[in-house]
Length: 198
Image: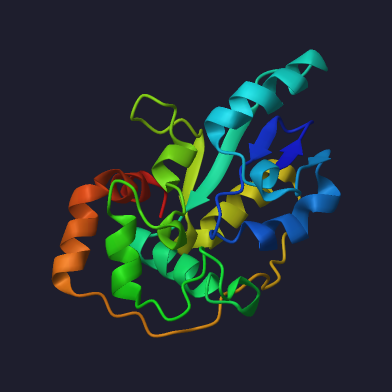
């Protein structure tokens, strides 16, 4: 999470949406950089409003807006699935090593997924708790150039994004019945992505 004081802007770090690269480019320009532990770096909107905004307001800041990116849900899940295949998770409950993508997605679509498929919700991350989007400026990961253009204009700076934290490539096959189940059970994920600027 990055906080830009003069510009009254908070950049939320939705996991698996290019935020590590954006942080790498803009951290020196931000007044507050929250990068560790991951629970703080990736604080969702509701947690940001509960803990970070009161801190800002106590220091005299007001009128801050939020900005974030969300990723197409199947692609987002694919990034998580690939990321959790890494060597340092081998043998851990969160590891997806040896688990087909189809099974990972099927688990994610359940009410209570297995630990390896428990990756949160983009809709909940950017939501205001009432089933609607709470982030002021929401962009699609697939149109990151629009987010970059927004940040360049808002921050009056040019941005060069390095490629950081990229998951290794693996083929991802998803049968129609699993894709349909995902769309039915996790409809809010697709609605949030559709609503983002793309």
